[in-house]
Length: 75
Image (tube, rainbow, N blue to C red; front, side, top):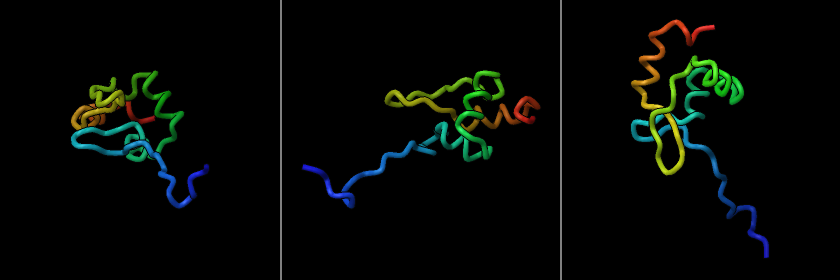
């Protein structure tokens, strides 16, 4: 038995939460793709994720703001 299309839930990654910026929120903030965010994390242009909620990880807003003060996020 199939579920009618109008009752299917679309799962999306959270963009924001209470004091958490999720990866898709970082992508929206900087206007970058998932691959670029991943690359920036590997290169150290983004700080390490410092929040874990139910297996999902993200950043505190103040962590990202502190990182924006350094010139490494540009270019």
